[in-house]
Image (tube, rainbow, N blue to C red):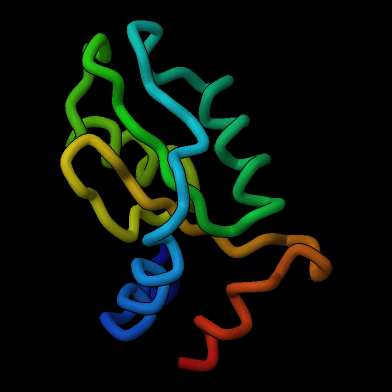
Length: 107
């Protein structure tokens, strides 16, 4: 990930507040982290830009391992981790799906 794509504190606060009432959209279970799962995340973020995921108790990976896997293999940014829940953000490539990113960019 490029350093100029990193979010500033004010932007992260906005995204955390925006994600507060969201429910997790994806779960990580015993199947763990796969490239197919990353493709699904990327597709969901293309439509929404901001989602939550959670690690089930049966997951064989930690929150830190999951965060590193996501950030190392995609351009998705982990905005926040709370317990076993991660808040993910990625700017949509399709202009029609960019509802949050223009606000974040102008902060």
